[in-house]
Length: 423
Image 1 (cartoon, one colour):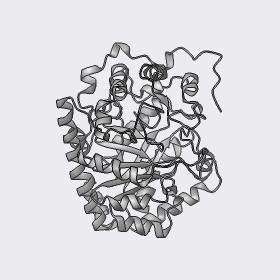
Image 2 (tube, one colour):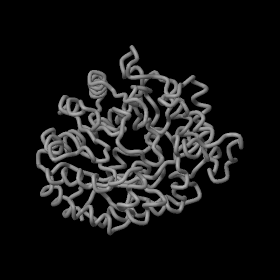
Image 3 (cartoon, one colour):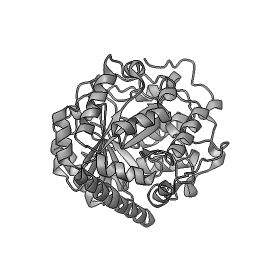
Image 4 (tube, helix red, strand yellow):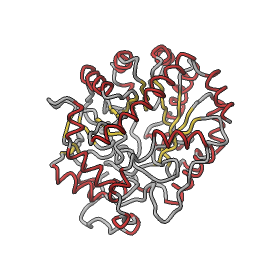
């Protein structure tokens, strides 16, 4: 399997792009994690990986979206983006996740990508704006991978994304990337309407046949103004997804990403461990994209490294999350997020200014952690080694986690009856 994957990488992707991936994301990314570990030992903090939502606008209206896509367009300007990335690089970072809205609606996106050839960018996109010309420019940059979201079959995709013709437009953008030998991935937010169609070997085989080099199955999170809780997976379905990912890594020549488990199959939250935090389109610094309360901003007068290191709000979030669950605190204990925001005077960082009401009205949901289920460890030796070295809990749970504080989300009390879920 590993030889088949290596052959695919060599034959189906531009060799210069492979070198950029291996050096900027691989070697330098590993260095950034080791730097992060050294900082933690000194009692200092700066996340080795940043998610950056560069714009709130999007051409789609997806179920369960938490971004203010219908609000007046707001974006992080190029100068601010460059300052942030430059500071992060000085801290050892080299790998950045670019989100939206739809990132390709930011007309200066390529100005930023081209300004940092020594960094590597993963752009989360619906693919609709990736024309052949755009794909050629991505190949010329070399330091960027497109991660294109596909949410189901043609009918389900259109339903999930709130518009007709979504699937065909996404597939066209995907094909433009593949035709130009761009390093390309496909991600899916697994939910009730697509899990049976896409969490299958048949779908993975199709991706491989097309030339897709990596895929990411993440779990739908019912948050935001239209949370669509009926789409959320059951604990059994989440375990099924974990087992599928572990098994497929040993069978198919395609890279499979996951963000919520260590090498031994123990659940973790990348924001609770400090591996990553999020910057929204207004420059507000949030624990993660679905926690829309902020105390600090990239536009603060202090240098960004000081902002992260001195933030009592982010520090308290990491401690609170790690104390109560190895899973997603937003899903399991939304009440704790409310308390955290109140303790620190963190403000609603959305344009709609309804995040607190949404949080109070939300029902608790299960996440990737369950103390009653045995962890599913990695079978692939390559993934085990990679996670042991670079992707684990960095001792956070050993330091803070108290299993006695874990509350089964399915047995938690319902929200007050006078709170009505926003539509």
